[in-house]
Image: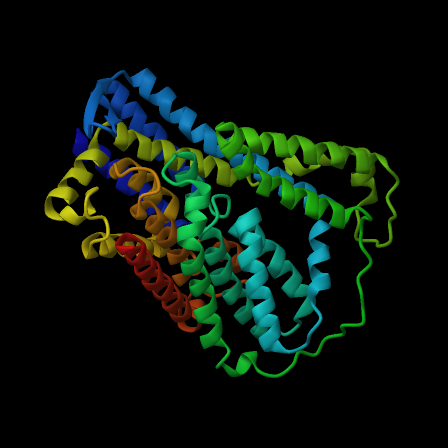
Length: 454
């Protein structure tokens, strides 16, 4: 029966990775795979287990208890993401991200590349790499008219956004998963992964500046300034970003799960949104949908624009991986890795074998969605919180996806917005992403070894 379970999982996984070829949204195979796996477990009365991380052994449990346990853990991540997405949409409702365009004060392509890369790096750490990419590509479309040049900038934004998301507990779905699962703490993650992530962003930019496409100046009018669509855009931008940054502090002070802090932040931002929406808007452009903003709550409007397909995909894939974990398969696989690769154990975590395995996981995240890879690693490895293994997994899974345009959420959304060709990205940008990934990985290993030997 275990063979059938594995076949179903691999078939679902394959359907997810071939989403663009099959022209079927990846949430469909994810949900189907999850439901079929748990149905097979229930119908065949397969024994389920709970992993005792301290004793490193499997403890028998009941199906209902395990399903409820994993649903609770999954719900923590989904509610957190819903809160963060809603705050971002509220900011966009007030056209808050237009404020960022005001930072552009140069026509030089090289300076613009640094500006967009640094903005992507910082923004993705706060509002996640997916949203940061959407915001910056939208600004790109307003600033750079030449599509060929814009494609290069979009590719570099993908690399920088993924690098920025890797060191922040709220910057990428995978780091959020590790943080909520108590595998990493916010401050330790930042301390150990920030510098490698900077290297992952800086090195590709330095190489890219050698290309002719990033030399010279752009033909653009810096004197022309856009009139804000809402007088409260800037206020809502800073309030929204500040409220998201507040969440790790809330968790540290109260020791409550992160989604509680995110709900508090959402309540605060939503309160100001309602107050401002009731005030009279200074409508200055025809683009601003006056009827929508006058007759609907900003919170309701923002909730209607949430990416629910992404939420359902996470639900399906996380509970599907949880099914394998409940059967003890991931635990047994980790035990076999420990047997053949002892350096993956808790003693000598700084060994070259574990580094190689995690690097392979990073490269794999460019081909296979990094969410199930990290979900599987959480169930496989029983090393303690803030072990270097978790920090390296956060870095590798977060940045490895940049090597293919379909390897990360940031890449996929940039591909959709700019119609970037898969093979164009593979030829032009992939090697830059690989160089950045390896530069950051080497930096991480050097820093870790220095800390261990200190």
